Length: 139
Image 1 (cartoon, rainbow, N blue to C red):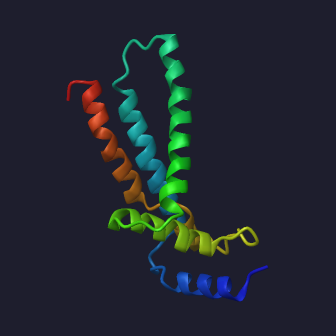
Image 2 (spheres, rainbow, N blue to C red):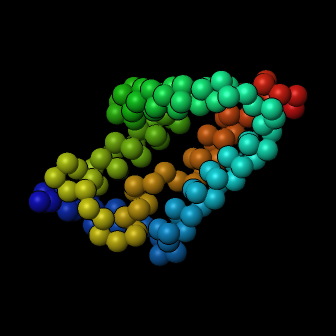
């Protein structure tokens, strides 16, 4: 059951979504950027030994812990830094106000805008990883 406050917020949020926004295109862009990046990264793998593949689950666990930490310390607490404040605003003040434990359903594909992170965020994450790539290989 939607509270009046949540109903009003959803209506106001939806009214701010540009008419050109397309949820399936949004999701496609995220997957296209992500899968293309993974493909490019795998092109640099050579002679991987079986035991080196064990680093993959360790890395995935570390990423999961890092995401939990970001949720705990950045996304759910107001921040002084403008960039971190923007993450907090997007996640807590928009996403968690739009979706609550009592109402998590989408009305339509336009609601995906508040669900999926913007494609530019994935590009930023990839760019942040470049220094690590350059340190482990000859750039």
